[in-house]
Length: 204
Image 1 (cartoon, rainbow, N blue to C red):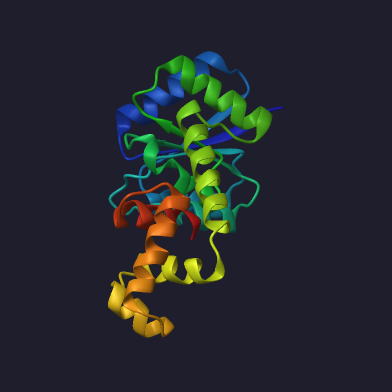
Image 2 (cartoon, rainbow, N blue to C red):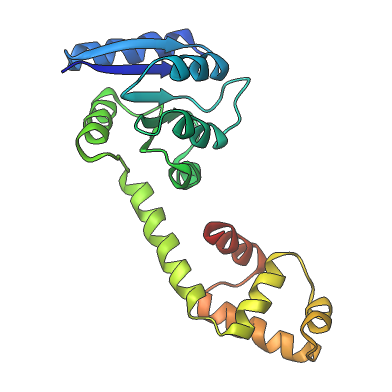
């Protein structure tokens, strides 16, 4: 059964190169193209695509919000992010509903495997992405182990409050805030506010 693919990318060479790889390795794909996100959206609204290979670097890109928009238009369409961005941002797109994330520097064999996996399993995650997902889960579990008061301090710290502001907000001594802060750092295995903020972003 023929699968309909939309390659949405503003670089002509990438669109053609991607199509050549797909046509060489799959004989049941019908391929369409979009040069802008606006054009991609129009096509998705009027036609049903089994897979959308989506660049996130369009001039009219709305980054990860594109994934949510596309899923709202065509919930059943699979989305494979294909970008020059590194995989450290992949989780943001996966959380929005993307089915896979590929760096454009990947070799053709990996790209073919990714497309096969998305159709077969419904997702494609590289070992690096899987590792980030596991780390994210571990951090989420660590936050869940915080006491109610520690969680309050954690949230206030993440929102940029200092010890004095937290003490006033929770009606406790400033020195007590310092004690909670040390406990939070120990439980989350972190050493500074930047790491704390990263964990906060991952779980919200």
